Image (cartoon, rainbow, N blue to C red; front, side):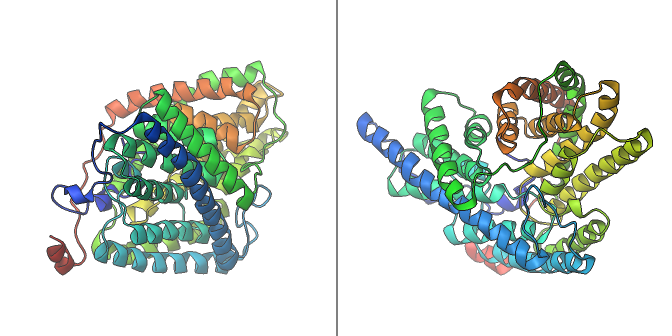
Length: 468
């Protein structure tokens, strides 16, 4: 199962032709005579050592994002200042134009002259991740998000973690069964480290990559994610990713979760199909040299009026979480329309960015889309049921659109609770909304078939012939 359909350019990940040779696989095959105690110690070393290294890597990527934001846009995002709202328009345009040109050239060269970087899902089943190319690929993703392009950054730490897991598996000569486990757990640990979300990181590995809930899988995945998140916290801090007003569980909150879940399921399913379409038809060869800069400039033009579209979606979601219900009816209608338009722009620009050839994630854009739409609906719900905070509605929409678009209700529920530092009492309405949305999304996805992936065109024919 692909962890994010379309987000990691499936056509690019399949650029190599022919079957994988045995040398491309990680590990050394089955070793039936290995003592169970040795296997347990090796997995324990992986959890502690590799988990800590992934935590350091996630923390460094977090600092790298802040450095890019500071240099290119002149600000560093936080819950109080999540987007470039006060940045001059010329600087936003210059930042995005530069990011589009630089990243287009870098990816054109990387994909044409280096061994392709597979998706995390392909790495789990044995496709080797080249070290240098993976590191460059990861840093490019952080760069474009920090400079303002509309795409998520969570794929970068997952790829870095998966690459580290593969190296550990190769050096310790793990069998194929353990290779799958440690690569998936390492990818989840990268996710956990960058967002301080150990439960979400573990469920990412268990629910989306391995689809396996045996105790051994749970123990390694959860342990690695916990170590990574703990170590990364020393580098980047442990503050909440989103700032919400004080919330209290109420009956209207639960009713909104149940009634709105089908809507979020449909939205998530359509966003998923949009990402799949973009990923299967992303710019190939030299087309990226003009398509990616063009989309970057379009993003900059939109950001002049809607600066919240920049980056991974944190600004748009934070805007939704801070929406107040204490507005006159006319102002509430106007704000609701603005939030719906913001969600639509974020979805379209994210899909276009993937279509233009960029690599990255769609988890935080999904959160932003769901939060904005739910906040718009919550403005009306708060007038129907006075006392229901709009932020509570936005929280449910964010979690449910994420769950339905990723088909992962456990990961989505835990991620939102961890990102917002919410108490466990909110697990019930958030979980119900995520499950309901996921069920509806599956029904929608059955009636909206995915697109067929196009063949990969190699930008350097001679390099392709020599590789063959």
